[in-house]
Image 1: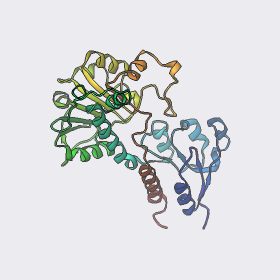
Image 2: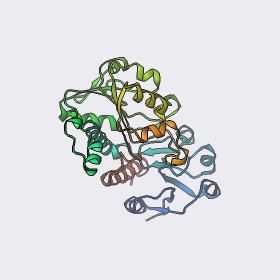
Image 3: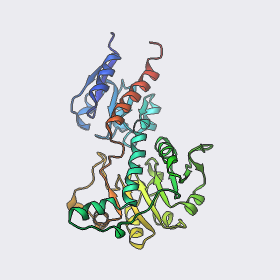
Length: 318
């Protein structure tokens, strides 16, 4: 098979993804380059496979003179200068469909855990404490759930909620005519008037920085539960903590944090501020280390989707 070019796997990729790329005729390079060291070698590659090791900015793109595509294994594209890449004719590929089911299941599982006091009850029983009435919880049934952002993740969540006998509202300012059998499309004011639970599924870019802030939270008629599995910086941690303290937010599920760096790592405990300490010690908050989309099945789906999109763009005539 004729060699179609070299691809640099900037982050570690699954063996299945590398194997399929090689079957398409690519040479895969797994060299552990830093951003700085890659600048000298960038001209050798026709494709990059990346997650979140570093940013692909205009300087690196200018140095990548043979680059035809960048494939982000996952959903978020904030570490890629997509606009500049497109101007240079470089295709930017991602796979948000790959972990939509995983994220939706995480949201529902975590919400059930929060509503049924599972985290606290488990700890109490292990400590020899047996409290039944004090751990009486709530049901999802008959609640109104507002989904903000109705892309792959939001749609998957709405579909999975269809068996819970709850009302699902969806708001997406970038879409029209997106109402379907699983949700009722509404404007933001209606969602704020009716929602008991709010789940965020929006991308991060400057326009969405602190999309959820004091003003946004105060716009809700009810006291709400808040879930964020999108990106940490769409939510003001200070506003969240203040409203947890005053009861406007009754509980929160956070798989992502505002403090995460480009590698999706939280800041070390010695650098935590007041807000992070509050979250870490609040029984009404469930925290996890950006794992909502991390399942074995999602990894397989990401591989299949990335390969399919590369084929679609570059191998239609093969």
